[in-house]
Amino acid sequence: MIKNYGDKKLSKTGSHRRAMFSNMLSSLIMNEKLITTMPKARELKRFFDRTVNTARKQDYDSLKSVLRNKEAFKKMVEVIAPRYKERKSGFTSVLKVGERRGDASMMALVKLVD
Image (cartoon, rainbow, N blue to C red; front, side, top):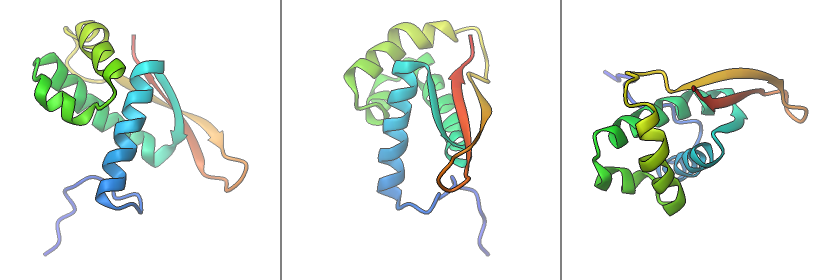
């Protein structure tokens, strides 16, 4: 019996998905907002929430395996994790932007909650 417990595959291989979300996560941390497609935005939100909780627990070894960008790692540890110290969950918000002109896929803005 197949149980669908994992993440969304998004028509990508596992290594491509991990690299893509690592890069998107670094961009979200550095810019504090990101425009992407809706399915990727929903998965990025889950991914970011797990990463913030890891940073709040000060488990830096696990955090380094996810964030390979040194500047993003430093900003996560020094700025973002202390900002959300009192907040339990819901660190990002996903807002619909509209449809992309080329293929009419729904675009979304992912931004950090203040």
